[in-house]
Image 1: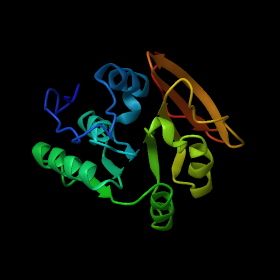
Image 2: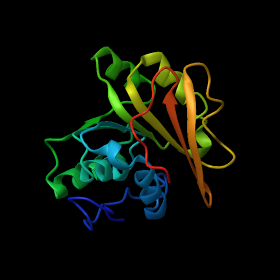
Image 3: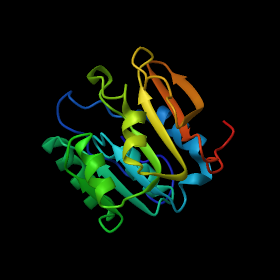
Image 4: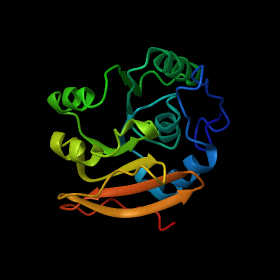
Length: 193
């Protein structure tokens, strides 16, 4: 697995040992960041269920100002730490070692706000089903921000409840990307792909 574009382009990322973690494939990552386009530059990014850290590090490579990665699994955190160190990116990335949704409570309590929330919960965990409600409840998505949830075709993020507007849904084989914005704000310019 490699960083696809930006200042770390081509740099290899260390995988998480074993089969517990399902990294986001290159094609899906490329599609995700193609849609986000210029909104990534200068943004504050939250990478939930970070795994290897590939999504957050791709955002950083493409110009994100700061990335917070939420990961509770010790072996995944070790992979993230190794990947951050290999890129020399420790100044711009922070790992928050807590489980979802406790991490959202911690970040909200600290007054954190993010322009982009990337979430790739384990497909069979059911954690994606109420993710939008949790994000809304903790109010960590900044005005004009975008939430992107990666899921299987069978297990989506659930209906976009009050406060959310679906922006786009793209399917790539067994992976679906669903993009959402808070309904009370216009999202920053997304690429038309």
